Length: 304
Image 1: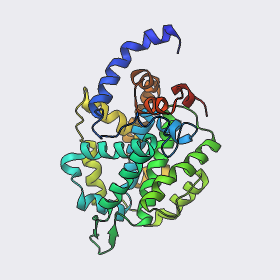
Image 2 (image 1 turned 60 degrees about the vertical axis):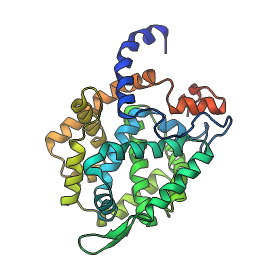
Image 3 (image 1 turned 45 degrees about the vertical axis):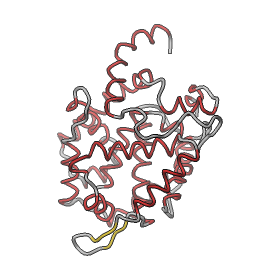
Image 4 (image 1 turned 135 degrees about the vertical axis):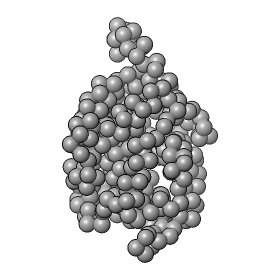
């Protein structure tokens, strides 16, 4: 970034930094991203994962896209609906999910392994039956695969739409790399390329549905109150940008209205324009800290 552009964008970056730190306060997870020196974690600075996940606007919008997709799977949704306090603490749930993705992406290996083990223990306690009597459990390999694929799809598309171009070969490498997290949790048959992800979605569509529970979760999401300035505007921006990433079949299944589709496109254009300011606002984010831990400049992640 030139010195002139730096000076011009600095004032706009300040409120964005305040917004991000308000929504996702620092160091509440207890993860040490600075030590031990030289530890690359599960992926490291040569990975596509570090590059895709360094793009915060894409990650935030992509995570919401993934959540919208997850509401379409009745068994995956049942675990959240029956065992989560999403109605009362959706902000906390989103923060915990964000912390998990951040740690498994950039944390040193010991921290990642401990967190994955903790989540696996929690999953063993989440089980039950849907309203029509189907059994579900959070450690079901097939459901773990669904949750992972929807998130990874959202993150990749968010990076592509709002932050930077992602060549097909890099996208395939990203899916192939990042499935390590899903498999560590117990997922199986995790697709490892863009073509495999597209085929996977085609295979899953017959079991998906948009029902009353799906609507309730999305209604709670649409009224979430983040502890940030301009909370309502921020919510509409990121929800719209997340919806803009949905595959067309999911947009139709979620019964998105013409007005909602228009609003999503407007949010997408706005977020795309804002994305460079997020990099300017967070020079000390987790990705830069992880790069410092392994002794490479953050500029390393700018190149595929």
